Length: 400
Image (cartoon, rainbow, N blue to C red):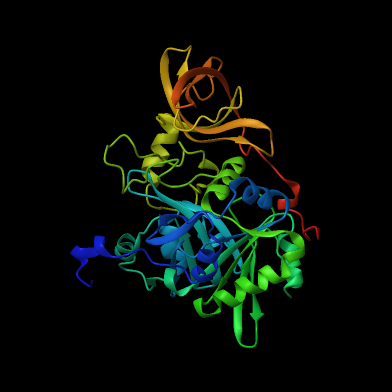
């Protein structure tokens, strides 16, 4: 199995929490994520979603790709790669960022954690180690993948802090959004808690060593018993992230490394990420192309939020102007339980995202007893996020 040509014969890895997640997975519903097997749904997706918005939910984050980037030049190296200004990221803080190829097309997005002046952790959807190592030439920096060295859980929902408090981590109340801190865990263990998440709700991400994984899981579920704590799968998480307006690589946009067709890659300007680009910090990957794209207004696409009439979810549907000209497609959609709206993320050709957005229609094929019925329903562009909860930003968090 050490022959790289036989990689396709390798079975999927299991996370450090697999003994617990497999025992609870009543539907035996699994999917691949980053070389791991991960739960799609445990038993009832609607109840798992309800736990995110009304109780406390736990999601196994261990398959997320994680890199350790450390050394004297770590800040300068990352600043050269990322569109955001890494020098502004304080120790003990996290920020959402993205990185591009030389043509200004997105390679991925993710979160960057700064543990010290010269020690960072980068978390993302896709694997980039060869690119990261090639980019490190000339810098005094060490880059390594540490995905298998960290067990991680996402604890989300209005009762998430209450669970942490009951578990003995009441000092997590001091964390502001996108801050992190280290806590003693057990007699000799360590736990990092960051106030981050992918649900648009109050929530935290917990990071520890794999040998402490089951102990952490059991601690949370014991502490959260009175708060309706529930494990959730990827399907429920996807519902929450759409309401929050968050994007996923190779679902809402094709990364430049995966794009087979030259016109499929997208720039941060087209994905609504212009707010994070620091054009004044000096040169970074793709800067010249992005400066030109912005100055000349050559962005062809725009990611937007849509409100769609009716209650039939519009996954994978096409968008038309005046019912006849195809001008875009849906990348993610659902009937939102929290907002009671039929919402979607959509990739639109410009200027139909704004100036000519007054006559948009979505072509939905609805399954009705093994037959598909074509629906042409009205849609309008709407701001993201679709759901904006004050409790997500409250400091200290509410103790439900």
